[in-house]
Length: 134
Image 1 (cartoon, rainbow, N blue to C red):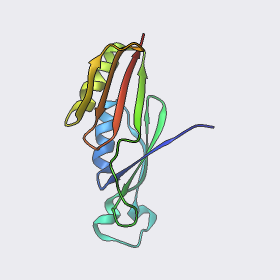
Image 2 (image 1 turned 90 degrees about the vertical axis):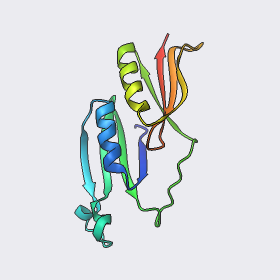
Image 3 (image 1 turned 60 degrees about the horizontal axis):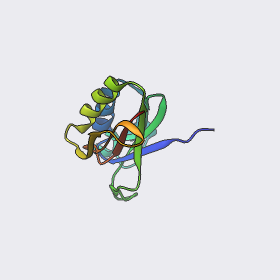
């Protein structure tokens, strides 16, 4: 059994996938559009992502576009992704990349639990915590 995570974006999935591929040096495992499913809405909607999968440090992350009509899109702060590192250089590289056009909540700093810790809301509204254990 494993716990999964699913990101819903308001028509930005392709951009988010491309961004996360660069940040985390990964490639999408699969991308299926609404058109490939035969969705009845047609038009521009069919170009949106119905379901995609990428792997971030071995964890499966699923991604989908929503149109804001059938399923309300709310960007919130009730969940963040936590990435634990044992490689300081990799942490700093990925942290710097995710900060691009994002909002730094806590800049890289030492804490009582971590050699380095930071929190960022990325350009797509996803919260990320970076943690280098002591």
